Amino acid sequence: MDPHEQRTLAKAALVALAPLLLALLELFHPHPHADDLLAVQVNTWLFVHYAQIVLFPLAALAVVSLLRGMTGLTAMASRAALFVFAICFVAFDTAAGVATGILVQAAHASGHPETWRAAIDAIWLHPIVGGVRQDHIPSLSMIGAATLSIGTVAAAVTLKHAGRSWPPVLLLGVSGFGLEVFNTHSWPGGPLTFGGIAVAAAWLEWQAGRATAANTVAITRNATVIPRPVVERRRG
Image (cartoon, rainbow, N blue to C red; front, side, top):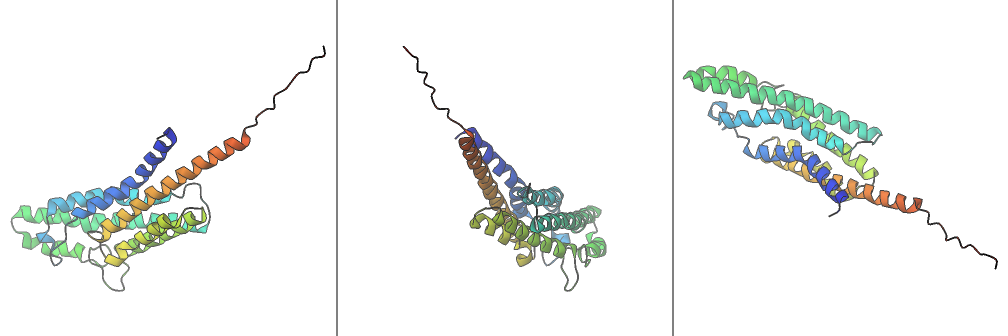
């Protein structure tokens, strides 16, 4: 493997790293039993939600990085939508995830967890920042899931116009709908969504590297001028 191919693979792995870590992390996301947070594995719950605060925006940035140097309405729409997704999910994760986890931890430490239930439910069941979606109310998780779909589809359209092949472009666009389809970022929604984005991002970055290498070789060949041999004829 030549140095350029090594760099291409390294860039592909780097782009895929954040969404891949997020997909793996969310395999361990606890599921509240009948929406009863007092029964959740609170240490695992807090670890997952602290890590998600970092990984949600990094996963969005991974998709945005595929559009570097690209202009146009779809590229701008993708960047804007993914920015909104990152903001919404960090705010949602902080309230519905970290804040409720801290309250659950404190409830068990107090020895009287039932006395904390009203405070926990006040956050968990809140229509905007809570962990349970309610009909006809634009919660942060709903807005975040919708803007992730918009961001990945707009990115896919932009990349197809830039010459990328159909398979990774389709995978990127379809993966962005996982949170809406499954209505959760724990299993199966989160792992399938961000796992698909990770594979698509690595694939697209690898294609971009190959295309750049091919263009460089073509330009180098066209720019090379082979001088004709000069034969001096001497008169005897």
